[in-house]
Amino acid sequence: MYWLALEPDDTLRVAAEQKAASAAIRVTVVAGEAGHLPGKDGEFDAVVTSLVLCSVDDLTGALAETAQVLRPGGELRFYEHVRSPRGWAGLLPDAITPVWRRAAGGCRPNRDTETAIRAAGFTITDLDAFGFSPSPFMPNVRHVLGTAVRS
Ligand SMILES: C[S@@+](CC[C@H](N)C(=O)[O-])C[C@H]1O[C@@H](n2cnc3c(N)ncnc32)[C@H](O)[C@@H]1O
Image 1: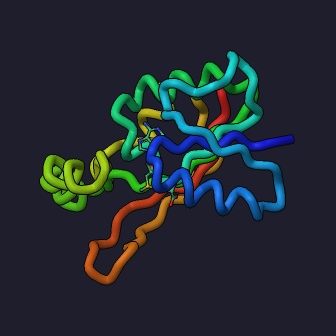
Image 2 (image 1 turned 135 degrees about the vertical axis):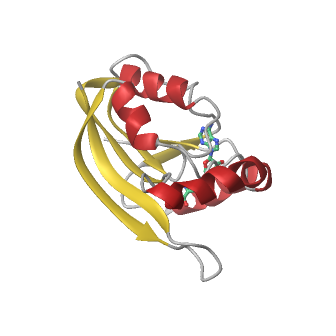
C-alpha cells in the first residue's frame, strides 16, 4: 500500500515532503492539483481531502474526477470547513468570500461541500459536523469530518 499526496504549492510541497520522509507509511508527494490527478479510472482505494476542497477552483470537476479514480466502493475521506446551513451564520461567510478568497489562496468560506459531494454521486456514510475556530481572532466555523462512498 502507498499514498500519493498532491500539493500544487512549491513551498507547501517541500513541507509535505519533509513530513512524508518520516511517515510510518510510504507517501509519495508530487506536484499537481485536483482535476488533474495522476491516476487511472478505478485505481485508488481512497481519496483524502483535508481543508482542500474550499480552495479548489472547479469543485464539481474535482469531485467528478475523484469518483472516477476511485474503485467501486472506494472512499472519499474529507475534513473541510463549510458554509453554515443556519440562517445568519451563513451570511457572514457569503459576505467575506469575495475578499477572503483573494487573500487566502482561493479559500471560499461559503462552500456547501456536503451538497457538492452528494451531487458528484457519492453517498455520505459518516458525518461529524462541529463548530471550530482556528484562532481566537476568527469566528466559530462549521467543519465536517466524514466518509463518502462512490455509489
Ligand atoms: C488551507 S490549506 C490546507 C493545508 C493542509 N491540507 C492542511 O490540512 O493543513 C489548502 C491547501 O489546498 C491546496 N490546494 C489549493 N488548490 C488546490 C487544488 N486545485 N488541488 C489540490 N490542492 C490544492 C493548497 O496548496 C493548500 O495546500
